[in-house]
Length: 493
Image 1 (cartoon, rainbow, N blue to C red):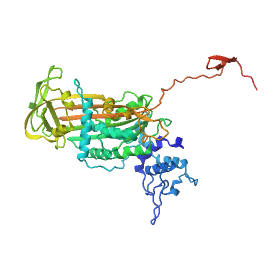
Image 2: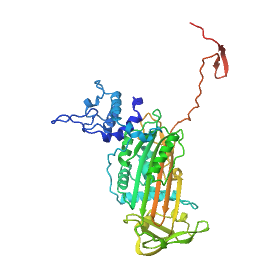
Image 3: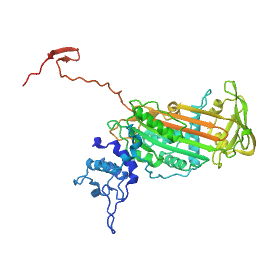
Image 4: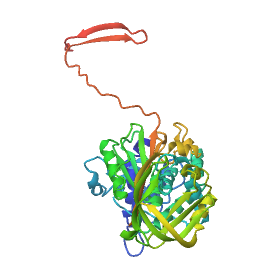
């Protein structure tokens, strides 16, 4: 039975479900369409999930008549196959973008069924602030410019956690701030949905799931795909995980970061089975724009004491921030919902030491306890990109089990006959540019799921015995022939 539950149909069903409309006949009594086993008037993924669970002895189906998809008066895996085929209709037209690379877009821009969005409250704020600071402390460095996006990392890891169970799930929930994953789904969905998309300020969030096109190794669970589509609006792709897929993934990231992050993935290893990706771009104009006369050269002293003259932005701002060990300024972007907080540690304290000593309470006070006054401000124009592997940081933060081959529990992510998965790597790349016009920033987070017991592909050779050859019957333990001979001709029977 297991061999028939193919990934292609299961994932496609998730995204195509939104296209399936109720079918009715007659004016008096609606007729449930074939496959509508839950009797809600629509044949979609939820029916396939219900039927699949019923086949595995979990739950029941509401309508056995509509479940008999192939009309043989028996309910079995062949009806499940018929459901898949019907839900596959129309998928080819969505794949024109990737038709040459072998990547199949299983969603084609279909809108998701929106999840229950949870109103942002102090519970979520405290959890997200705790995660943000913890991640920052584990990635900050003394001698490098570092930029992380806790927003992007939260999105990518939360998607991944929807496929986790047991201790793996518990550790991921704790690391992400301590919220149950169902609650975190709702909060993140609300947070992403509420972001602005206007001329002077816009935040674009995108998520995707890429699965290796090898059904013998991996088939995502339909319920997992349904979850990431509904909660994160994720696009779903299956791909050969070759050089062309590398290009497709990087192009997807480039498109969804407004060209600020052109590439993240360099290659896929044979054991890479799935990539869960978040991409976010931020672009905002200042509420109070700088004039040319406010741009002047000024010395900037680096961490190692070297001095470099650079362009600085001079202004008088309205909001001052401090916490006893640092002073700073809050400069607002257009409309005032977002601001740029610049924090200067006291003389003699490095940024590294300052961050290491921060607490969530102090950080919260910095961002919310600003004072209204005139603040003479000088901010350098700057631009850089940052790249990090977050595996060590996340392990130190308490998410160790998810990375352990053979121990990690991602059984909710794939079907039982798939390889057991663990997180192989978490790659995080960011970009920022601040100048007199405003700020551009982007981030991409890639969670790479690896399969257990994956052997490198064997080299293929060819031996065609269509001419005379030597042969032997060998004692393999002693490497000795029991028989040895030649075949120079084939005798007719």
